[in-house]
Amino acid sequence: MSSQGRASIQFTLNGQRYELSREGVESCLVDVAPDAIRKHAVQVNDTWFPVIQAFELATGIPRSEFMSNTARRHLAALGYQVAGNVETRTTPPAARPALATPSVPTPPRRDLAAAVEVEGEWHTEANVQAALVTALAGEGWRILSVANTATREHGIDVIASRDGQTAGVEVKGYPSRGYADPARAGEVKRTSPSTQAGHWYSQAVLAAMRLRGKEPQWCSVIALPDFSRYRDLHAETAGSLAAAQIEVWWVDQAGSVQRP
Image 1: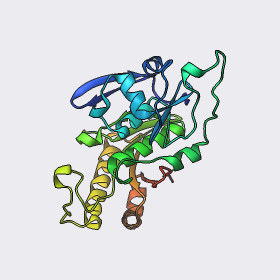
Image 2: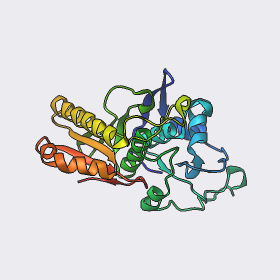
Image 3: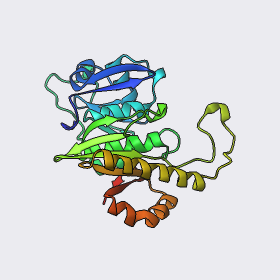
Image 4: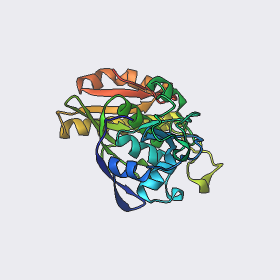
């Protein structure tokens, strides 16, 4: 388990405000047998749990009211190690010898990143944000704030700090040809993904410039899924972004983050 992260966080879900602490998470999961892990896992009390199970027990929020990405980013913000499907885990509590130690060592961070699976397309804004938070927490960053992208919460998408440096991150996904709204499933958007990506890139640059003016001591960052369209747009604006001291971080399909 990582010791990085915050002792407690506050977040809003479905219009209701919650507070979650490391102490509360660990207390709720003591002597709990983990369910089978099918996608995302979190390590708490030296045991791997499905993130859905851990978040539901720790918060009391029924799993029908949140997605695993929500659980991933909030548990990662508390400093817990989050990964994709973990085939091996510690023995369930009821079967452990009294003084047994965890039977499975923590996999290397590189393997965890490669194992991450996402709900839907990996390059949605929510998935890119969740992968970014997970990667930063694993690198020792303290996650200070995470906006709820699903509800289009206003403000900076991710605020993190390490070694006295605070980074404010504007996160964008990459457009799909179809709609995420189930009511419009099967419809094809009139605007091409390439054109829409240009609009989203412009929005991200504007947000990063505003942050640079508002918080000049912070590192102003744009986080993007690694697509050739975004790479081309960045190549055209790299000089201007560098002059404005705005960094671009790239998130790939495995969940790894490439920074300058």
